[in-house]
Amino acid sequence: MDQPVVLITGALTGIGRAAAVAFAKKGANVVVTGRRDEAGKELAEELRAFGAEAEFINADVRRDDDVRAMVDQTVARFGRLDVAVNNAGTEGRPGPITDQSPESFNDTFDTNVLGVVLSMKHQVRVMQKQGSGSIVNISSTYGHAGAAGASVYVGSKHAVEGITKSVALEVAEAGIRVNAVAPGPTDTGMLTRFTGTPQNKAALVAQVPLDRLGLSEELADAIVFIASNEASYITGHILNVDGGMTTS
Image (cartoon, rainbow, N blue to C red; front, side, top):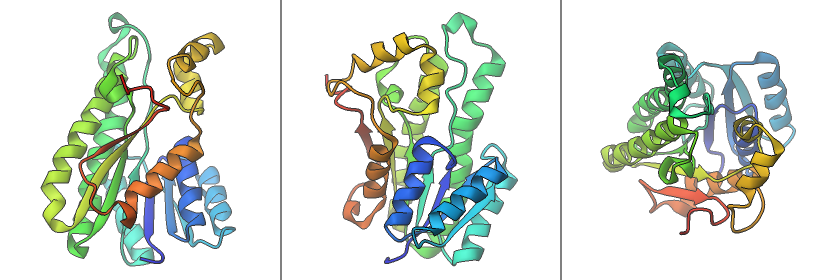
């Protein structure tokens, strides 16, 4: 479609924000969601400056009623939903397994896993009626490579990848594609919080064959591609965008 309708969760910062800008520059109508009204409205205004129609919806992906309303309001505003990018996520509480608790587990999985499940539940509901749609979940290279000191986060992203593949098989006959993009170390606020110190961040960069952090804009380009008709024969795929980090 010339002007696809795109819904992005966790769109106010980092990769989600970069994806919103990239879709707007391509001429899409964009709905951005998050939990901060002022930042969300400012982003929607910024997207309109690119000539896009854009709206902000306050939604918490951990709440089924919020997610249902988010999807239904998108369809009420634009008439359909062509692309959904499920980007809302948290790094949780990094640290050894002995430091984890039921609370740290639930906080991480509620956002990273339940949020994706609820989002796809309502996105698929709409896309099945249309007979088309493209869903992109945001995972992490840690979702299949693992990382010391990040067991709960890794587990949550591993779950996202398994769910992505399962739902892709479930909805393929309905004309819906479901894929995931797995970022490597990317220069975002989440990475800064996750690594904790400049030394830890530098050590992570040293593991990347391209010898640098990825940029949110580079991840956004990958998201736009795999969501688009140019990737129409790709579904159930985990696209690594990681500077070669997982090639070995």
